[in-house]
Image 1 (tube, helix red, strand yellow):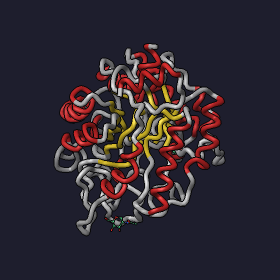
Image 2 (cartoon, rainbow, N blue to C red):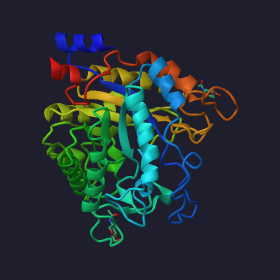
Image 3 (tube, rainbow, N blue to C red):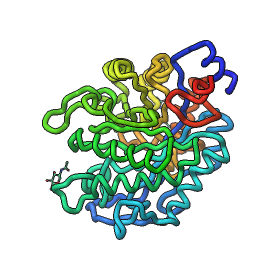
Image 4 (cartoon, helix red, strand yellow):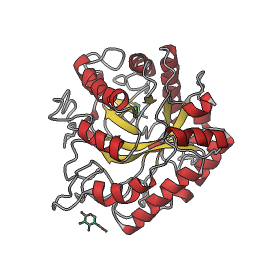
Length: 386
Ligand SMILES: *[C@@H]1O[C@H](CO)[C@@H](O)[C@H](O)[C@H]1NC(C)=O
Ligand SMILES: *[C@@H]1O[C@H](CO)[C@@H](O)[C@H](O)[C@H]1NC(C)=O
């Protein structure tokens, strides 16, 4: 792996995927309330209502499939309990469990981890995520956490992982239905706080409207200006950030249908052009499909497209995680075909998506250029050394 990375740097091959793996959909389990009762599932019991990773399946991904990236989801209301609010005061027991998972991935296995606050830029009521909770920084909602509180949270979290160069900071999962300018302001406040905490780690900057790649340049009307109008203006003194993009292949890009009908290269063409124009890079931290023939073809195309376009330097497929059981993380019309978690079975006991999709489609296309040493930087460790 190291040889391949160095060779790519020496020969000047530009298109290079440095990180690839899976999203661990995990710490956000056990919160759903049918009638949106605030506080449902909080704080929850670690190991019973939710968990972050199963170490033995992380072993399989790293040792057998040679992937080097895990995106680990958590929710803000567990990390920063409602009693003390969003900010620098953490539930230390909860943080300890989260840190154990991140340390296992990075220090024990030598892979890289994205910290993923799975909160849709909302805080105070995750009972019906992604729709409930006050939008962070909404100054006309007196129950909303402020942008300053969000920055305080990120400053604290970043400080705690600043000495781990294998950790990346995903500012927020899928902000939506809020002014694009507020997404930008919250992002910039987080970036400022992270750097002020002395952390040089790679940062993933999300866009509004679910961070969708196909609509990155689209104007949704009103306050929902295109992400492309704002996100290139992020000011990072470390110059170490990428755009965080999600892209599903079903009819409405939601990942809730079985059939893949969208072409990834077509969907991302405008985003790719915008990235190129602004000399920016992106990572696709959510994409996926079902085990249909069309999805297999289109997911292969997606992996190929990222390999061939130097704007893309990493990806995590949605999703593995310890608590899925026979349920599917996406892309099955609620049919229970299992998840990308190794050992996963469908509801009828037949092989789950790990076998019918990951092993079949993803595993053969794991890039050979992944980075295994050095800090996570947009330019890559090898390029830095060269
Ligand atoms: C902000 O809060 C006000 C008052 O609760 C609400 O009407 C508005 O929809 C909120 N804005 C967003 C983007 O959620
Ligand atoms: C997808 O996986 C399920 C569960 O193993 C299986 O029943 C189904 O036949 C598979 N679909 C296709 C198109 O292979």
